[in-house]
Image (tube, rainbow, N blue to C red; front, side, top):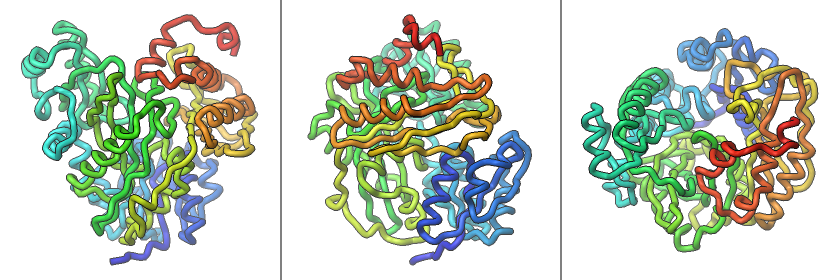
Length: 461
């Protein structure tokens, strides 16, 4: 049954908040932005139909403070809440509070979100559904002794992961038993501090693999489609720098298998909305399930460029109870697309954030170029949140042309301000590296490259 949505409150900030507001405007839906004191003059506050102040700069007192967000939604007459990514986007309690207050949560149901948010639990469910898994623990490991027993059985090195982890945090590799003792302690402590739950699980560590994810759309009437895959292997410390589609070097039968596994996994947990199934593909072509992300991804524009489907609009339609209205055969990705994350960070200083005023901010343009950003010239990047400044997304008929467009875009992108460094020089270095150009990179590539000497031109920036 359709539930009309006339006003959406966007419980987020930055580029994703502005992205959601733009899709709302195209749909004739009112948008309500929320903002902290640090974001009072942000782009989405200027753009949205209405904006509500929800607290001071610290996220725990603003973007993570549920009472103020719900009050803002009720006061402005919102019908639904879009959580974006990060912050409360994967919090089942927040989704439940929205439901209890008559607000449609634009995402999966609270029970489904709780399920997919427990990565140890969902790993077991995916195994039962027939998806291939890496050797590892059956659920969480409660003690170091239990972790040592699992590691001895599957063999070192192992990877220790926070069961409630996300955003690349709470993941660490243990090379031997002595290493495991310290890694287990650090990971459980970080998980408890960041996610509120200290549970961890173990998997066999694959040193050389591709990180490939599949975009899903599922409605509440039982229809589900996948929109192709994205390769996210260019990462530093488990956080993505560049994403692309299609994944280079992926055989057609393996691509088909990824899509089918993703749909099987989504149906196994009763997923609705936009979500992502993530996999590892090793150098032999063997694939294994990693996790489900129950939200829209930072890199969703890559899929939009490939398919022409507006994922935010589809999220809102599904939350309103509408059917997808199309099947798998209607989804036809074409060409090649890349996304480069331009962050206010200094790669030479361990990717230290470099907040500050953007005295110059001139994004690129031209054919096949899209820039998603929550900033404009004269704005300041606050020190309180994620350091993402913009996402440069390019599309072209071939991968080589998409890379060339990305390089042109990076060369045109002017970002300057006191103390502000960006990842642009590193992105240029990555996109011209022969390993990336040949499509032979794995998740270890960036860290290995950063451990070596930096070119003189990069040191000067």
